[in-house]
Amino acid sequence: MFKLKKLTAMIAAALTMTVTNTACTDEKAVPLNVGELEITFFDVGKADSIVLRSENSTVVIDCGEKGDGKEIVSYLEENDVSAVDYLIITHYDKDHVGGAAKVINKLDVKNVLAPNYDEQSEEMDKYRKALDAKNITPQLLTSDISFKLDDADYTVLAPKKDFYGDDNDNDFSLVTKVTHGNNVLLFTGDAMEQRLDEIMDVGKCTMLKVPYHGRKLKNFEDFLSAVSPKCAVVCTSQSEFSSQVQDSLSDRKIPTYSTCYNGRITAVSNGNEIRFDVEKKSN
Image 1: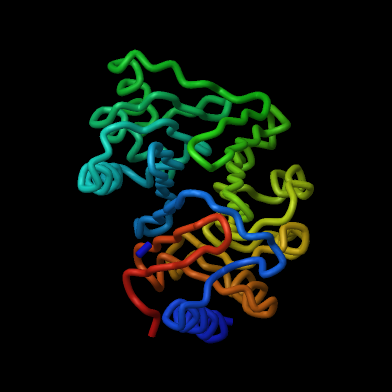
Image 2 (image 1 turned 120 degrees about the horizontal axis):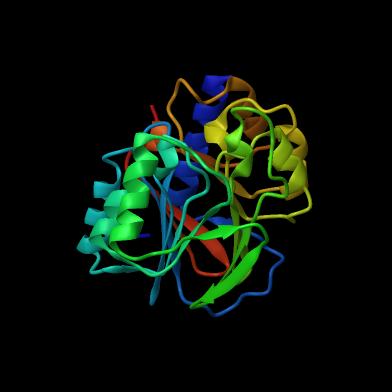
């Protein structure tokens, strides 16, 4: 179930780790009995499209580009899921909000969380139209929000500024921290330098969704030291995945999975460890 050459070797090692029944875990943690949490990272190029499912709940973080929402809807319908408890739009770039209209139109979306800034684009027009058609008012976060679904505790961290510079809406990215038993999952959207500085004190995590599609960031090393992930996932294309970020992950021996090499990635947390299943092995 559930330098490029160096990182390819790390990915291969991670896959071997899965085959031999080893998993991403903190061996010092006291085992807990909780239900499973499944995290699916869709292979949609340089875009974020992520679904978290537990026994009685579903959370969607970003919806990729226009057309990618169809894949989310199909996946959930195939798993007999018709409702989304929370749709979290980290920010309004087209590779995050593009497929949101399809998800909202086709599924029963109960809550929408988004950052509090404005953006004009075709994708945003369709997103707003879908919200209006379903009479949904998104909660535009200016402060952090927490909620619990099954055995998972969610905290969505709001940006701390109302301006990060011209054409720099990536730093408005909502950051989602999920605590599931002994595991902490951190989803960072397209957080860049200013936003990473804001969340340096977020605490250590078990699994990190690498920020900004694995592009080079000046304080990424500092951030890695601060959160100390046991494993990492990158939603990206090969052309966007910085060799510097690849080296940073490889040098720290962090098992890393990326959609550009592994296709769709499924991570399953049982509260004590995280096991990975991938669509394809890297060459």
